[in-house]
Length: 154
Length: 250
Image (cartoon, rainbow over all chains, first blue to last red; front, side, top):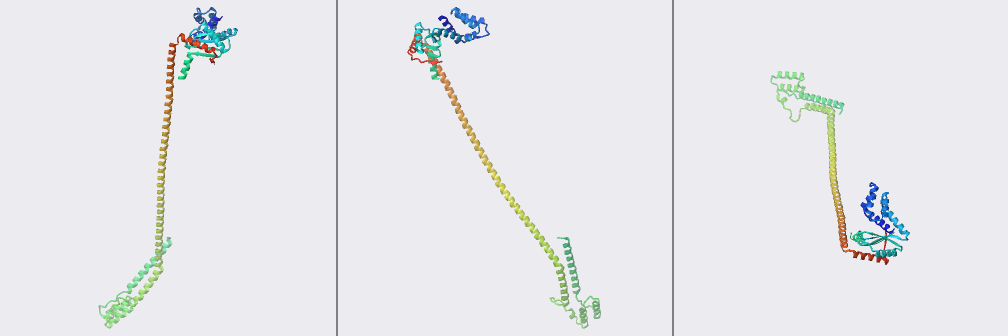
């Protein structure tokens, strides 16, 4: 179940960050079979069958625009059943298991909650991490530092 | 002058002429000179007597001539009268004629002459009065003209002065307006230049910042290798775990 959640979560983030993919999957003019074929091409050999079927189903009924929210709600409910909250963490490089464990513990101490990490590889952060737990964002990325520098100079 | 007054004056003149004619005839008769006899004494006496009887000469003259012829004293009657003192009858008739003439003239001529003189005087006085009135009126008109001329000149001077003052005021207003517009234009130009300068500086600053950040990004990307990224991640974990990290609400 954890693997399926991760696959769904990563697809949702990919869909949010890729305008062209979102435009194709949400275009009502494109036949549903065609949209499902795109999903099949993207996830067929990279994700589990359950993940591919769930995404294909949502896209087939024309709710691709709501797919990120649906997946987020699903992940949150799955985490809540385990007494945890989802922490979305973005990093430029993959984190090791040890780093994930220590990061979850650190975020748990910072928020006072049991944390379930959802790691998103995002090269745009350049370096460092940014974690969002509910409405709380803890930003330690190089990208944010550069943006702050740009704002100060400009 | 009325027609009745004119008729009365004409009648007076006529009477004066008639009286003068009578006086001249009397003087002519009375002044008939004595004549000397050139014929014989008897013929001369007879001629004298006939002349006296016919009334051509006076009785006194006839007696003088007859006596002179009879006494052969022709010098007696041929004695020339005094060149200064006329004969008595001449004085008498001349005086009477003069008195008659004087009375006639006093009675009829003098009133007519007085009337004419009075009328003439009155006419002349009227003419003089008319001329005086005309002169006075002319002087009044001239004075009025002069007054009007002076007023006109004064009015013209005032109008010219007002026009000059108005022209000066218009010139001042135009100058002030032009200066104000020029100052406003300069101020707007300065303001536009300032705004444009600020805009250019802002854009330049933004471009410089963007270039600097892009340069920094390239430097960071080139220098931020895996080891450095792991170090940043470890630093993040340690910072969050130590409770020093501050979160922000999204």
